[in-house]
Structures are given as C-alpha cells and as structure tokens.
Length: 443
Length: 196
Image (cartoon, chains in turn cyan, orange):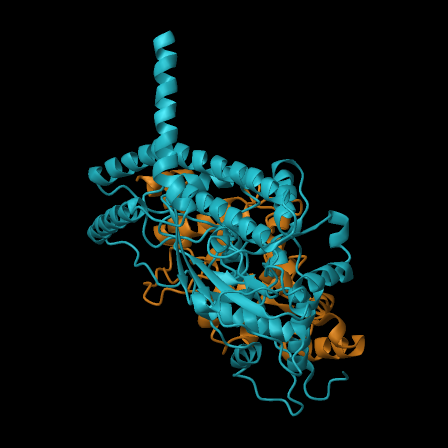
C-alpha cells in the first residue's frame, strides 16, 4: 500500500512539474515552445485524411452533395407583392389596385410551412452543422460508418481527449483561476500608482494566458493596430463565455456584468481589487439610466481600461450576428468593433445555455480537439451626425458581420427565450392589407 | 460511424413513410432532425407550443391555422408524432411531373387535388365541406385584423363569394374552390424544394 501511495505521489509531482515547466511558465511570459503548433499540425493532417476517407466513402455510396450554405430548403426571396401578384396573374386587374383572391392563402401557407421546416432564427440557437465530420461524437449527425481505420482513429481520439488532454486542461484551468484570485488580491493591497496598474495588467494577462492554454486555444489576431484603447468601448459578437478569455489574451479590458454568487463572485470581487471593473447588482440592471451613467463615468475617465461589451445580449451560434442592443451605443465613447469567428472544425464553441449548464459546457470545451479562432480588430467608429443609436448599432453590426463572414440578421437575440412581439405580425398584416384594399385604404 | 443507421432506426416505419409521402430517405432524416430540434423537451411528439415557438411562424397572419392543420385528426388532438408531421409536410412536396397515370393507385399526397384540399381546409375550419360566409370572414379577419374596417371585411367577403359561388348557396364548396383556382400554378406555388 505504502509503495502505491509513494508512487502515486511522485507521479503527481512529476506531472505537476511538467505542467508548470512546459506549459504554465511559457504561457505566463507569452513565449511559445511550439508544442501546441506541432499538435495542431498533426491534428489538421489527421482531419484532412479523415475528410478524404469520408468523401471517398460517400462517392461510393452516391449520397447527398454537401452544399456550401447551411440551408435545407430553397427559399424564394420574392416580396409579398411579387409572390401574391404572381398568384393573381390569371385574374383581371381591378381599377383600385386592391383585390382579395382565394389563392392569396397559398402564399402565407407556403411561407408558414417553410418556416416550420427551417427558419432563420431558431437555427441560430443550436450548434452549427458541419459539412464533414471532425471525429467528435457530438458532431456526428448524419455520417455513417466508412471504414475500420476511421473508427480506430476515432477511438484513439476519444482516449487522447478524455484521458490525456482533459485532465491536463482542467489542471491548467484550476491553476489559472487560483492564480487570478491570489494575484489580484495581492496587487490590490498596493496603493494606487502606475506600478499597481502595470502589475495588475500583468497578473490579468498571465492568468488569461494560462486559461487559454487550458483550452488549447489557438487565436490569430488580425489588425493589431486597431486594438481598443483606454477610454473606449470594445464591442464584439458573442458566442460563448470563452470570448472573454480569447479577447483578454491580447489586451486588458474592464469587464461588465452581473454580480454572481459562488466561485464567480469570488473571482469578481478579487478582480475589482486590482483594477476597476463594472459589476452590477441584479436590481441595478433594471434601471437603464443608472447603468448608462456608470458606464459613461468609466468611459470618460481616460485612465481606465476599455470596457468589453457584447451587445447581442446572449450567445449566438457563430454563423450570424443578431440585433445589437442600442444601450452600449448611447454611452458616447469611441467604439472599437471586434469580430470573433471560431473554426468549427476543431471544436464547437457555442454555449447552448438551454441544453448545457456552465460546468458541463466547460467540460465539453476541454474535451474538444482545440479551440481555434480568428479575431479581427476593426477600425474605431463613432456616432455620426444625424445618426441615432439604433442606426449606429446596425452600422457596427454590419461591419462586424462582413469581416467575420457571418450572416447579418436584424432579429433580436432575446427571441431565444421570449416570444415574438405582435408588432411583427401587424407589419405583415399591414403589407397585405395594402394589397387587398388597394390605394384608397383609409389609413 | 453507424450514426445514420441509428437515426433511421429511431424512425418507425421509414419505408412505409417513404412510400406514402414520396420523400427520399435523406429528406426524411432531415425532417426528423428538424422534428427533434423543435421538440424542446424531447417528448417524442410535438404540441402546439412547440410550433408557436418558431419565430417566423408567429409572424405569419394565419400562423394559428397552419398549426391547426397539424392537429386536424380529431377535435381533441393535442400531439403530433413524426409520421403525422411528415405527412402534413408531404403536401408541399413538388409534384412529380413524370409519374405515370395509374387510375388504380390513390392520388399521392402532393397531387394538385390534395394540395387544393389542404388549402381548402385552412378556410373550412368546421370541415363541413363548404366555406361559409362566416368562415371566410374569419380568415380575412385573421389576415388583416386591425388594418381594415369591419365594413371593408364584409364587402370583400361578399364579393369573393359572389365571384366563386356558382350554385348560389352562399358558400363555396370544394368544387367551386377548385374551379376558381383553375388557372393558378399550384404545383409551383404550393411546393417547397429541398436543397439537399
């Protein structure tokens, strides 16, 4: 028994020192040993081979062709006027331009059934479907058995991911978070000075770098010259809580969010000690004026770090950008837009909060191959003359969508949980009524 | 990985379903994925709330009636299983132009007549085989609600009945419905094409 314990202890020691030496220390100082690069190269080669095998298997079976878009059905993009006009083509036109025919219902019923088969909004709240399998069980939707070699590779992948990578990553994450709490508390004891700020930035950066290693995150930053500066507001599309780690790896931000209890609360309280973040009580969040005022005060103080805000308000599955809430755009600072696009081939980063809670989500992240993403810093934008907050928000949203290659939607991300407002239905009815009643309608 | 096999095994009577509806195996699998995605609580069937959660459908002026078409089996029907789901959607499959005319086999679900019957049922809520003046008024009210006055609704209703009602019984039967839509390209307008 004693020997077993002794052996276990020394194994644990060796393990820890390997982790610290090979991964943590280089991460803290922003140096790379090349281990991750090699891992990624091997991974990419393997996945390419797997794709090739699957495609070969498919051709032999002569099945569906993968299409570039994620759509299932062909949607006619004709407007209501055009479609109903075509339905009414066989009838003579009435003098006042308005008409009702029994065939009008075809347009609405077809639109209705199209949305039952596939709609633009609901699909954004579930994970993106891959065109080709990436050897993870969780993305295995319609891929069938191809060959023994592929299955062996998948099995090997499971072993590597769950038995080697996951414990490693969990260790790193634990080290990272405890370092954050301890480090920021220690720095918080110092009096306010430039040294304190510099130290706090260092502590934050180091901890986020360790956490990023803990997820095997490979991030490519583009256009670093546009990085957010002090006194500005950084705005990005939201896919998961990991976005924060990704962005904070390359710069220091002031976080905005709700006060939580438990472990999150401990982290939040210690972070605030070393540099100002903005945490709101749940009751304060309802008072929009108060929220805007606090954010404005922070932004106006040019020595404070840029605020990081996700205007969508909820996690979207990284295929599209949904409506940006105008609150962040009314504060009045310079907006630094950032586009984040994850590569779904290596791991699905989307947090489906309806299906998974935070802990199971993080475990899923740690058992993926890796998190690979591209971050583009876009040039700063400010509100133009005669532009209101909503238009400004849409302009920023379009820029982010264009850079990240995402679909630009104007649906509200809040629809994940709420019902559609009646105003949308009324808009449709209004459009239709002008076709029925014609030009001499009363309104 | 045998996953398609396992998806297929989850769907009962796939071959029968393929025969009855004319959907290919790949399309049935797609529809099954969608069915499961809509079935939030993994009950194995859909209830009206699951349909109401589809945002674009909630925007549709006759969204409620379309949902009703899935629950049309009986007055108390509250659940839709996958088979019924697919059968309703089969109405919107594009017509097979090259189908040989066999007078003995029944009409496929997506024939012109059956598409018309589907549309007719959206109007004829009490299923008595006729669209009464009242039923037509209700549909118009649903589609236009507050955008027009009650008088306008009534006059449109009367005009429509006048145009189509050939036997002067102040209601539109299925035959009159079919005849008035004779020239409309129903095969094209009431079809949903799958991309893959």
